[in-house]
Length: 160
Image (cartoon, rainbow, N blue to C red; front, top):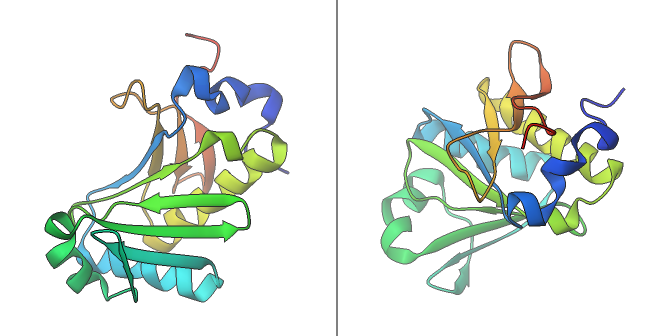
């Protein structure tokens, strides 16, 4: 059974309401958590590309990536499946921040893809993973809840 149903959450997947690139965050992280995400990408066989200053290079270890990421304008692009890109922005060890493109997630399949991603990261780290609108980053709308071991609503899609 899916964590969330398209008919219940489609507003949270509408780029006009949420902004095309909502923010996803894991708070209170460490270099070790970043390394766990890099290891997850490898172990899942997800395609990825890493760049610094626009130049493609091999994905470094998390400690090296974070040491030079801000001044190097680093990006880690990950494709858990073809047609679904996730862009990690390794600015600091204290949080894992990434974007998803809602235009790639416009159906129940898209909801399921996002839920699988949030669950995989949340389970690997044992931490909540929240999605906030690009237009309102202070108010998460859905996320992985480690206690429930599933993606849950954190706001009412029809309240806006």
